[in-house]
Image (cartoon, rainbow, N blue to C red; front, side):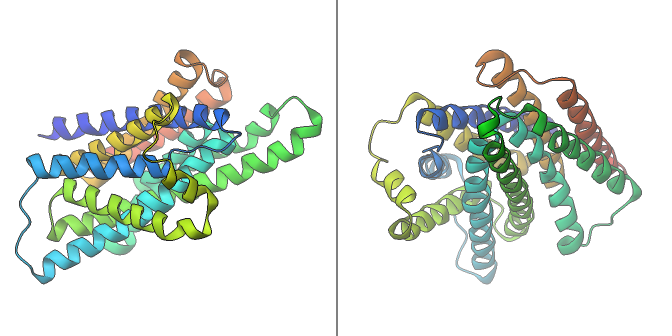
Length: 310
């Protein structure tokens, strides 16, 4: 059963990477702003709802545990479906798929830190070493990226500012997703159905976007175009990220939250390979990125070994 969980987690990482590349291409076709956030949440709600009806567990009788579980899934929906996904999409638009995917390596770091605070897990020397390795990899990318900014000197300052904003949003997205892992863990303690959790979180996201649409022309436009035929990049990004979230929830059914968060880090390699070598939407990663990737992956491996120990 553990291999099933790991398999779903790897599939989720690939789908998130594919979706991030699709977001980049969609943004380029729409003047620098992607249009798939609400669409991806809607697809997630439909897919998870259908799967819940087909293979999900029956809803238990009304009880305090049921309400607590629903409450945690609602909070997880706000953290992941709203904050995490909105920050994720916008970061890709500003920074690109490869760099955003590297900064998403902070998800297991945030998830572990929050688990220490809220679940009482011990912070060992191995975890501290993993923190240092992952943050070192992120620092290399942040420090080396200004040298790869646009060639036009007139646009360099604005491009640098946009990239720094994108990096900040990517870190915020990672923190939100890390928090969502912990709240989902709490939710499944009383309502152990990942499909129900995915569906509830997506519905919370749709309610948020509908409530925000009177104040946001962007969300209003996306909601108004939900019934229109999506472009190929909209369909790719929204569908891949939606399936990725469902796959990630399925992984949580068979393996631990920490393992799922750790395995999610290989999304970086999928994104770099897809964007640089297959779709060719971004330059191929250089030596600096490779070194940063190795450091981040080393941190993930250390964390995995520590969590897998006795």
